[in-house]
Amino acid sequence: MNKMSVKDLDVKGKKVFCRVDFNVPMKDGEVTDDTRIKAALPTIEYLSNQGAIIILASHLGRPKGKVVEELRLDPVAKRLSDLIGKEVVKTDAVYGEEVQEAISKVSEGDIILVENVRFEAGEEKNDEALSQAFADLADVYVNDAFGAAHRAHASTTGVAEKLPAAAGFLMEKELSVLGKALENPERPFTAIIGGAKVKDKIDVIDHLLEKVDHLIIGGGLAYTFIKAQGYEIGNSLLEEDKIDLAKQFMQKAKDKGVDFVLPVDAVVADKFAEDANKKEVDIDQIPADWEALDIGPKTSEKYAEIVAKSKLIIWNGPMGVFEMEAFADGTKAVANALAKTEGYTVIGGGDSAAAVEKFGLSDKMDHVSTGGGASLEFMEGKVLPGVAALTDK
Ligand SMILES: Nc1ncnc2c1ncn2[C@@H]1O[C@H](COP(=O)(O)OP(=O)(O)O)[C@@H](O)[C@H]1O
Ligand SMILES: O=C(OP(=O)(O)O)[C@H](O)COP(=O)(O)O
Image (cartoon, rainbow, N blue to C red; front, side):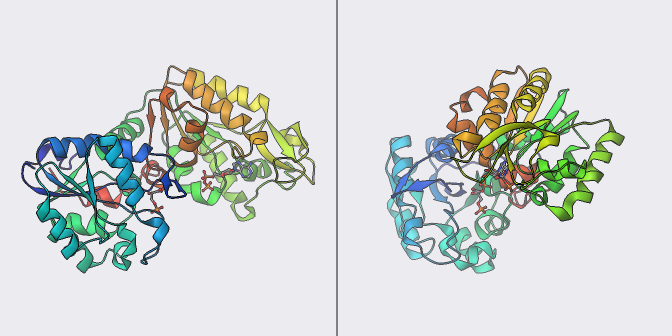
């Protein structure tokens, strides 16, 4: 990467404004999954050991420029403190005097976490004054928030333009793994795309068709393709206005010699519910009043075979409605196939990462990205603003 690394900075005794992605799931004021906090520890520990004064900043949820009590970062500060074995000073302010005062009271190696940056209306607007207020707190900037790198906000891009700005270790690792995978893939290279909406995955499918040997489609978005092949899909998810595009993708795959793989069978249900009546049918046999909520066993087997012989596999999006146990088998089967393969496996964040975690298979994957939207945009070939804003080497 041609961007400055945290390793290139002399941070001893310096104030470092470090953007992290601590947008973690919470319930009843407790952090329920600390994966993202753990993922930022190497950078935080390094800065601390180097004798920097660390001012951490993150968003949590989407408070839209207002203070939302449940979205305060106090539980996150507590969990970070437990993980790192050191006090973390949490401020109620996002910037300004209260934060300056906290900074003046701590010593080298100490850690401050400011309040949820999205409590400020200027954050998502990439407001000049807020960016400057962040810059005024510190000598240098480090961005370790890969999960928010696709956002051009005050704490991800604005402030980066005002201070020497470097990538943290998590940011570097994410970019390096995803970058290597896409630029110089080991072959056969397989991408598995699932989830709900074709609309959201158009760019990624289009970009991946230029790169992969096998493109596997699962989840709700598969049925627009099945419909495009001329089959009845009942009440399955359909984006009518994307049928033509689905046809174009299948044609493009043919032209490029890409193996475009669609479900051959499905688990159909008579309603969208855990206790629905369900049955397995071939893909050309979906009954008119039923909907396909998971890939079927033949499809799972076929996908697992492709995964087994691939050298590199990227996965984004579940194969079915995995939140309901009755329709989780397809997603489980694909997760297990990835866990078993000798190929290098990359999980593209979001729902797939949650699924892999739920099945207890995260440790079996080579790389589980901390960014859903960010890894998707990266896979679309887009420049991430949070990365572009960092200082060139
Ligand atoms: N066959 C299906 N029918 C309806 N929803 C599905 C199906 N397969 C997967 N889903 C849903 O897709 C959602 C995940 O989609 P996701 O990948 O997060 O993004 P997107 O909605 O943008 O495609 C999950 O909540 C899952 O329940
Ligand atoms: O959780 C996040 O997104 P993700 O679920 O797509 O990884 C990031 O923290 C970005 O949050 P945002 O989509 O509210 O900007």
